[in-house]
Length: 198
Length: 252
Image (cartoon, rainbow over the protein chains, first blue to last red):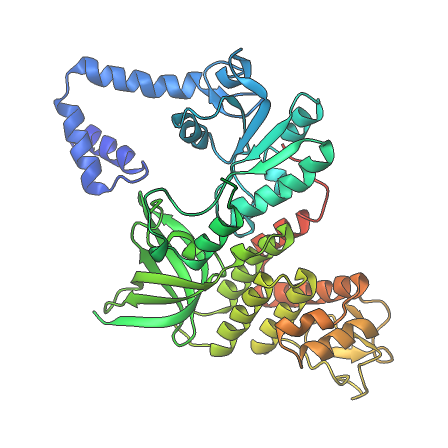
């Protein structure tokens, strides 16, 4: 290994991160080289902490540093309403709105025939168990508005409805601030389908 | 850098970088292509719902010499599988897309295959029962690829197959009940043969008037999967998922 071996090793590792190319990795590596030792130690510590302390909630499968997670234990959350999402980062997106005060259930994916992901690969049984205990009044299906998310939502609705719970699907249609003239037919169709009374 | 416009079917997409997608699509005039849709993963992308598998649309792309990947300019969806509201139909979307992707070679025009895919997605959106549609699609796909054996006459004695037949072990020929070796599997009843005879003559949108019993559906599924496996030399990823969606869920 040359005397720049450690730097090259860092570039190689950074390049493995999503969205980081060769030039970006090199720029980040040189940036880290210029930083005070304490700052770099803090970054290394944070990365190590994430791997050592973050785990999955045994109830909702969201990422957490305490099991069960905040959303499953906090008294201020309404656990009679469960919002079902595909991935942990979807929880963060819903939380940003500050409009939802219920609990979550993370499926860890969506039905995807092209990727070979079927019902057995998703956290469906634990959702049915939670709802089956009778403390849930409504399940909001907030999977993505694409073929995979829609298939997952319809599949879950079929399983949940016999349990006597209200099953709702998040609205699909035009984004706020957009123009109907430029929307495609499918989007307008879904928006019309999901219209509501005023 | 010429701009091409074409009727196309989206087959699948892969994430690329932070916001882009690589799109695999089948054009009516230039066969299967791969291209980059810049910004396709952004919420307000002009591609929005147009890149879902089996979406039929009008698209335009730039092609550069010696570059395998084209650059997609726009996709205007004409017919989308998202119009369907059954889990079986939506699960089959991936199955149809994977089958076309596997059988269509790159940049080899095949207008009949494109028309088959387009007609099937139109039928899905119209709410046709997905079982007969899937068998129809498999039958025509295999026929267009030249691997479906003749379905009217026994390959050994030339006798009529309308009373039933059997796919021979090699998977290359259909023989009548009299010529068939005892219980080798791959049997097709008279009902299954009647479906195949109808499938040769009608468009997929007319399949609603063609009956297919559950037993005949199972027989055709077995024979078609055997032919697909033999010729692709592998199992389709989507098939296992499509099959599991008809079973009770186990999860976790």
